[in-house]
Amino acid sequence: MTTEIDTTALAVFIFFLALVTVMGFVAARWRRPKTLAHIDEWGLGGRTFGTWITWFLVGGDFYTAYTVIAVPALVYTVGAYGFFALPYTIVVYPFVFMVMPLLWKRAKDHGYVTAGDVVHGQYGSRALELAVALTGVIATMPYIALQLVGMTAVFKALGLHGELPLAVAFIILALYTYSAGLRAPALIAFVKDIMIYIVVIAAIALIPAKLGGYANVFAAADADFKAKGAGSLLLGGNQYVAYATLALGSALAAFMYPHTLTGIFASNSGNTIRKNAVLLPAYTLLLGLLALLGYMGHAANLKLESANDVVPALFQTLFSSWFAGFAFAAIAIGALVPAAVMSIGAANLFTRNFWKAYIDPQVSDAGEAKVAKMTSLIVKIGALLVIIFLPTQFALDLQLLGGIWILQTLPALVFGLYTRWFRAPALLAGWAVGFFGGTYLVWDAGWKPLHMVPLGEAGFTVYTGLIALLANVVVSVIINAVMPARAAARA
Image (cartoon, rainbow, N blue to C red; front, side, top):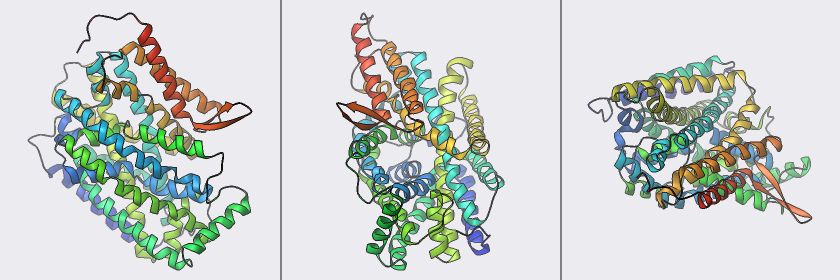
């Protein structure tokens, strides 16, 4: 992949990046309320987003630049195992259909903005609320940083090196997010998703034709896997359990993240969420098509410094400069949209579940919105520092923990929607066992998200997040059962 500056590609890239920047600032006037000095308006868009806006926003949260870069990179490296994201995004939507409308109603009826608000309202425990909020922020930070990994691959393909391009992009992001809040990424998501669809459809239609057809694509990938003795077009016998548990665990974790919950809470009704659970699988088709680009990288005989370069290298090698610039802009915008929502979600958590809970319980609505705005800036700066001063591989290691961490908030957040049996001390103990136990298992496995479970002379590999969640639930149930029943529920 050449790293010299292509002026045509760079010009197209800058044009579309400038377009979404203008849209980001215009978003402050889009559906403008009486005031943005309220966290409901700044952080949740006034809870007025209908089916289509929610579809683009949640899709923008879910299918990020890192997804566009990392899924094909994983398929390029290991083959079929990298397709675990497809069943994961199929499994997640029935969960969304059943659970998220109930969670939305609880939040809407009581004015909750974050998962921490929901937990505190249900159990009346500041400690459990803080645990859920801290987990959300910690799990989100490396996720934001990894958007920068995707943007780094794009800037590298454009011939732009160093940290300055990343810093400029995130300064722009910070400014329009500060002024418009959630309305900015919601509006930009329309452009981002349309661009991504154009790029992927063009790639799937044209690249195989340039490479001798799909038969040649799969044959080339198979030959490369056999030559290096790693990866394959089909799952190996020892991969089935790992593949299935990774998909299931990722599905359960996906809508526990602050940014996906922010999209849910911003919806205008439970029916909007149900409709989105029906419509969002269209993104699964998109993801499957994206994954195939990993195989195409083998057929194109690309010379890559990193597997993360496979998608930019394909477009740079096989398409004209103007379309490569368009594709790179789509990927970069695909980083900015979720990064904005992630920073807003993290800022909402800090404001409602730390600042208001411990620092200034009497803070006004305007003061709350101001704290959230400032926190969103700090979160972006923190993510930028992570990627600048820590090795990329370290950020990737942290992301492996992200899903395991956020999965431990599921019992406290979801169980209370269906039963009042659980109490806060038991759920807090379960969270601690799952959070710290899961972290230890990942560290012990060399920062890999899979753990070998012995069974007789053999064993099988399981996603560590599910092991930690199981321990979490078991501890919660046992402690809740043996604790003496206390006086009537606070609710």
